[in-house]
Length: 244
Image (cartoon, rainbow, N blue to C red; front, top):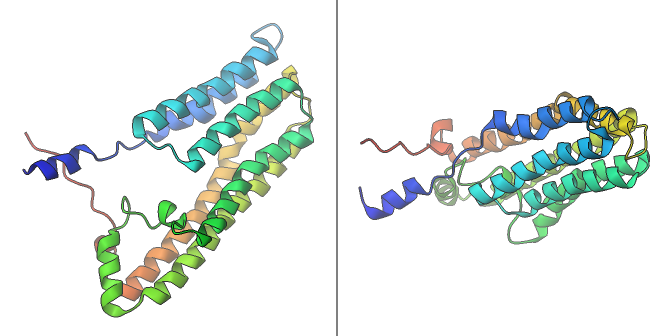
């Protein structure tokens, strides 16, 4: 194997462990906030500090090890810090709900705003070289003179992607308003925050994921139609592991 090939193989990004992600960012913090926020246990302040510190620590570790320091990752960490900070400051439930909606809203606006830059974010989320054989698709589009139509397809995918973030903003706001009724810094607030975390997966993550899957499906279907390539020719084939 050539040195270049070895370098490419060794530089393959390590995939994130979904179960560890869920445990550190959702399950364990929710249990801590619900079960340990009572005054006779950790209390609301320490339960909130520990509950927020776990996903914060995991996020920093993951960003460093996988080298994914980007705008969206930083915003996610800022969101966690705001959750802890605002909770300790005793913010009202309404403004906490506004904060919950602000981060995904910012994501959606960033996706739309990136259309006016040389680097539209739809290429980061959907049309990227880790998932799609971009070079092969671009070659077929050039040969068939279909780039103009493909650009319109990417525009539609951008609107769907931004729509997923806007949907998340609305669901975050509604969920926070329905569940969070107590001011920050109280045992009731910590318990309510834990309940909100536990419900965020079925109420927020699943619907948003469905919208993103639809956007990806429409993009791949459009690529198949414009290039004549089959699905296995469009998707990036993961490199084989070195055999010793």
